[in-house]
Image 1 (cartoon, protein in one colour):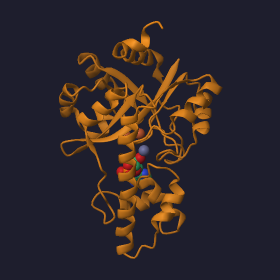
Image 2 (cartoon, rainbow, N blue to C red; image 1 turned 45 degrees about the vertical axis):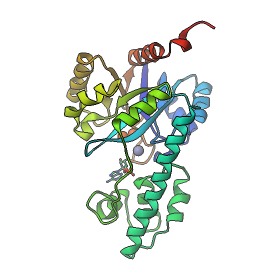
Image 3 (cartoon, rainbow, N blue to C red; image 1 turned 90 degrees about the vertical axis):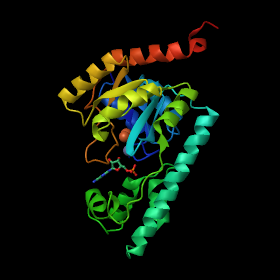
Image 4 (tube, protein in one colour; image 1 turned 60 degrees about the vertical axis):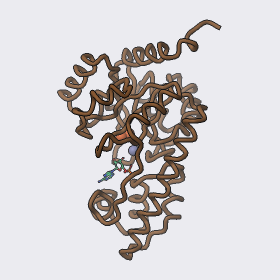
Amino acid sequence: MFADLHLHTAFSDGTYSPEELVAAAAHNHLSAISLTDHDTVEGGVPTAAACARHGIEFISGTELTAEQGENEVHILGYGIDLNNQRFLAETERFQQARQDRIWRIVALLNERKIPLKAETVFELANCRAPGRPHVARALVQAGICSSLDEAFERFLKKHRFAWVPKAKVSVAEAVNLIHGAGGLAVLAHPALNRVDHLIPGMVAEGLDGIECYHTKHSPSVTEYYLGMAAQLNLLATGGSDCHGMNKGRPLIGTIKLPYAAVERLKARLAERRPHAAAPA
Ligand code: AMP
Ligand code: ZN
Ligand code: FE
Ligand code: FE
């Protein structure tokens, strides 16, 4: 039995609907999945419903944008109460910051006579947590760029003229927010952010695990993080980081996390929430 605990839908910058995502999970014989959209848990309810229809176990999740010093890091949250009011209010703020950032990116494009309207981006994104991939898609759709890559290369990546930094919370805040909603906090794709030296500090701030299996982790990198997780008594998780058709081909199915990792995750959630495990 296998799981994929890092997946996106069109509730953030993926392209799949919840139903399409879960159908793809079923097609790849996954037993359990978590939806980890950026800065939102809005897709949780429809994804859980689709999972129930397909006989797949659903684990609530999110991927928060955070920073440790100058470094952007992503913190996955698992087992979050989807109705936690403080969590919903805070993520609403993050979503608003994402929307404000779209306005600023479009203003910078317009200053250089690139005729894109923010409304066009919002219409295309059709979600509360838009990001640069939506701007890139709008630029392609308007015929201004011929590919998403071109949009990033010319305008959107760091040091290009339409680059706007993303609003971030500290890792400590992200971890506290996840814990406050009954969840566990896991550092996403550590190799992508080159933050190994910061992991002990994050663990001191309450980090519960590290994502060891990821599409961009080679087998030796995965082994390295599995060793680190064992040594620091951290959960070892993994997922494909599938964004649907965004990156040419869907990544779901390329990472098969052994189900034992899900059992360890659930056991740790139960330890944290003794009331939930107690008989009625
Ligand atoms: P944002 O969250 O708005 O900063 O955008 C980050 C997203 O943009 C990530 O999902 C990246 O995979 C995606 N991205 C970054 N560079 C590129 C690129 N050259 N082509 C397509 N997508 C990219
Ligand atoms: Zn994304
Ligand atoms: Fe990420
Ligand atoms: Fe992701």
